[in-house]
Amino acid sequence: MTIRPIVLLWIGCLPLVLSAQNNLKTTVTERYFNGVRRNLEAAADAMPADKYGFKLTPGQMSFAEWINHSTERNYSDCATLKGESAPEAAKKVPGLKDKAEVSQALKDSFAYCAAALEGIDDQKVLASPQTTYALLHVVVHNNEIYGNLAGYLRSNGIVPPSTASRMGQAGKK
Image 1 (cartoon, rainbow, N blue to C red):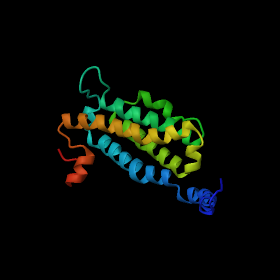
Image 2 (image 1 turned 135 degrees about the vertical axis):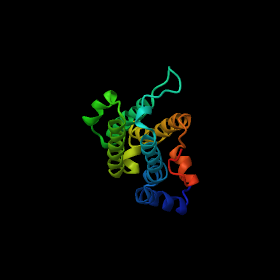
Image 3 (image 1 turned 30 degrees about the vertical axis):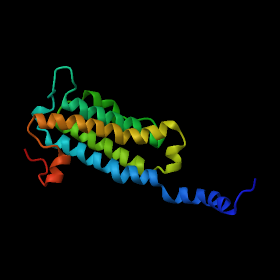
Image 4 (image 1 turned 90 degrees about the vertical axis):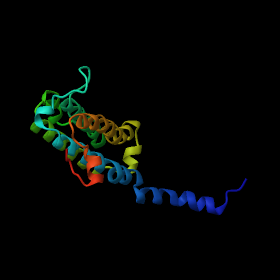
């Protein structure tokens, strides 16, 4: 069995192509992270302060608890991407209740994640199952949270930010 020269050329060039492209990081950041960040931050801003304790049903999390859940996961997952322990700010999140502090903590956690994404490349992300999971979790889990929050917003007569932006309404009731 002989190896064809074209196969050898392809195998030889593969590391250069993979290291130059950084497709996973770029796709996740530009297509998914930035969008879900924008939607969640806008949802936190759109919900009136007196509705942060709102629950669709008694057994569900409140609006604020959903936002705090996103914040906690952002700190945890992005700390994994940075190869460090979650920052001190993460410890305060479970006790946050009012709009100003809950919303600001979410924004701070997304800023922390944005910095983590700047410091990674595809090779680092794919080096361990933990980092791969953390990167995907930042996007996938936050989209799941946003899907839940859309119901909370609609139940309060607020058009979710993702819909409002497509309709040119930007948070109108």
